[in-house]
Length: 101
Image 1 (cartoon, rainbow, N blue to C red):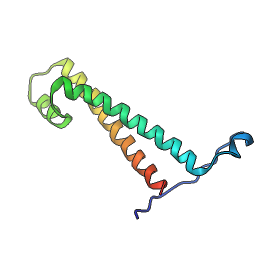
Image 2: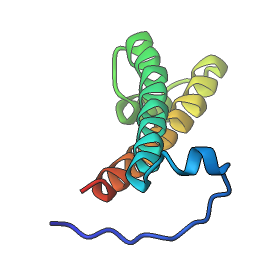
Image 3: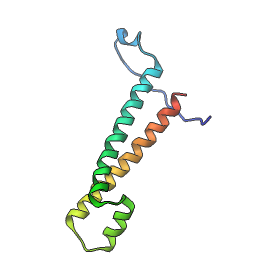
Image 4: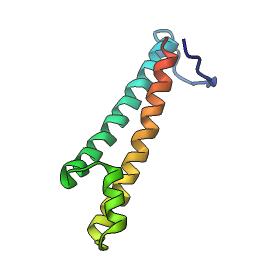
């Protein structure tokens, strides 16, 4: 079983809520948020994959070699940002999944 480094945080919530919630439920909520963010960025990436009928790496190589197009350059920057955000949230999702074990 893979071990994950964790940090302890302190939440201030009303006693009426604290009595009914467990740590695993809080991690589950964070897991749902990470999954939602990851999927959101994946949907943004799919728009560009459909528009250019390729993946990010291939599009970047083609853009760097070809004629300069402001639309393609703008799309490249957005696509790269969405890809980085997707990778970040996918990592957070996997880290949180490990905390659920």
